[in-house]
Length: 361
Image 1 (cartoon, rainbow, N blue to C red):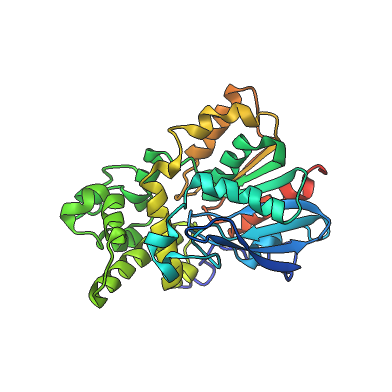
Image 2 (cartoon, helix red, strand yellow):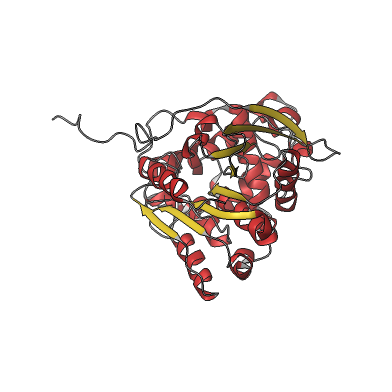
């Protein structure tokens, strides 16, 4: 049989409109002390262009130069930066451990960091705020608290971070997995990715699978000194990271977890996510839905993959419904035939088209 014409991945290939450019400049900005949190940032595009603040996902992810390609380099001044504790920012979980890197690492501090960065870079007027996944959460919270600084919100893969959203991704049928691994007993991403789910679940002993996030966090909260314990903690971080990386793409690339399979990235990504998720993203229940009136005057653009299993489409539906409750419709609401990742072809096309079509600041 000839299967050569079957699609083997859904990641972006030649859908990019703009070439990869080099940063105009890069820098480190100290935003706190005790510990000395310092953010790594890069600037792309037109130095005097309309500013775009790019907010990466996770929490605990990082930026990469490819993220500048959504934007016309002749029009926009694009700011990429790594949030506290991850990427090239310092200290990180990998370099200094969670006891240091997770201090003062919460939503309030991340929102304040955006203002510190815009001030340091001389951004005095409104800016476009562009965020996906956790970046969409942070963008919404920032806009709710500082609408005077926002020209438009461009949001991808809406993440509201409620308990049910997290259970869908991390709990699923784990509690009964040892007896009935293929039981569709609860909603969850495992339904679409059973092999990847097996690898994630089996890190945790059966008697602890009633609370997968809690069990993983207990491993991350340990302070291992023996090499075997350090390796067990790394194995858990890699399992957490690779699980999310795999289900981020509608068609995962088999055998290639990319950055999600790198030890330093996984340690930062998994432990920061577990830190935020155990504390409900450091937000009051339904914080975004209850405060959408504060962003009712802003242009809001939403792109969501119909087959997103990290942040199922219902999260975008809930946001749109909340906006409707205050008499507002998104200026753009596009559903792509894609999964979660910003690097899926149709999502790249949609986000680039939105940026090209925005009204001038």
